[in-house]
Image (cartoon, rainbow, N blue to C red; front, side):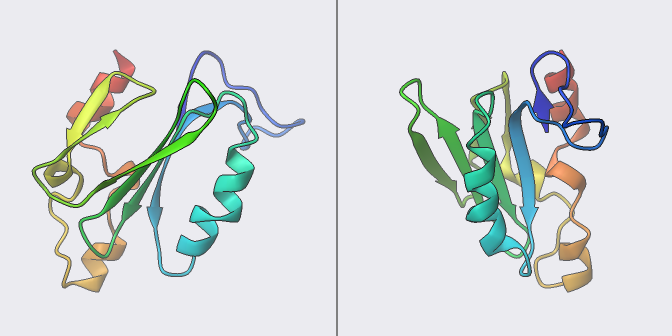
Length: 129
């Protein structure tokens, strides 16, 4: 999750942020339909929310939803390891081969252990700058 400015929390909770700019999720078989459906619908009610990235853990496939100035959501699919995912809400890009580095698609244990947010150390440092 990327937040612009200070986090705004829901009620008295410290684990529920209400002002994310971007959310990245790794899809699993049990939650993929919910993540792309009802969950995405709920996220879109947040005015600050600009970008939603879904990373498939079973194949090289990333979906990027970005909000236009007019309020429409555009989808861009990435399927090739050589492609660079160019984030729209932060100044950062990462190649799919970096996201899937070390992930062996034929090994279910490795697939399920895909790194949180699938970002290399270099990409995280770019977010911070």
